[in-house]
Length: 75
Image 1: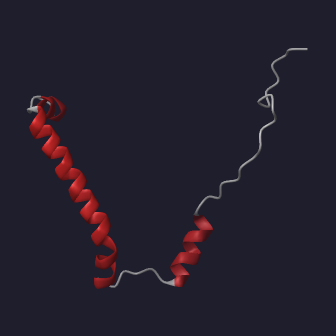
Image 2 (image 1 turned 135 degrees about the vertical axis):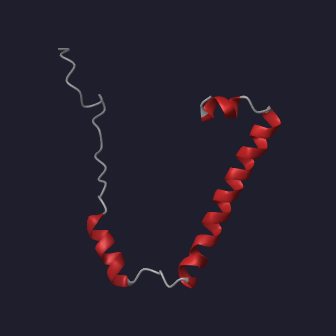
């Protein structure tokens, strides 16, 4: 029996509680992660932030023409 089948065989209320528990655990992790970084001395320095800025891709937005910018072959 696969993990997905085992999950699907649980009662709906149990699946709901399991899902809510996982979301709660994830939310708690998000809230606590900043304090944990400070406690373990893992706060990024300004140099680290500059290096990260260099490798993060930049997104540019280009406006489209009104007809969608496609050549549809219609004349």
